[in-house]
Length: 81
Image (cartoon, rainbow, N blue to C red; front, side, top):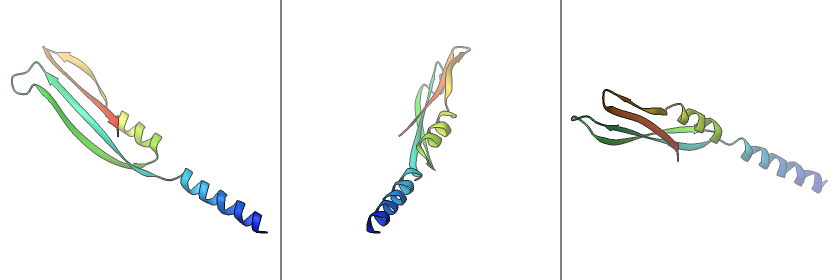
């Protein structure tokens, strides 16, 4: 009986940790060049309370590919920390 209770207890602990949500920070860096008003980078961060793969997906949605229009280049790159 003790073996069965031990196995059940271990299984419950494993399930609890497997579905655990954690706090993740998404850090986004915006780069702008070719303008007189602002030329450089800025960084902003957002916090997610989620599973890692869900936090990565949410963070990746903020990415903007680097583009150039009228000599001004800009883009946003986000990474989960």
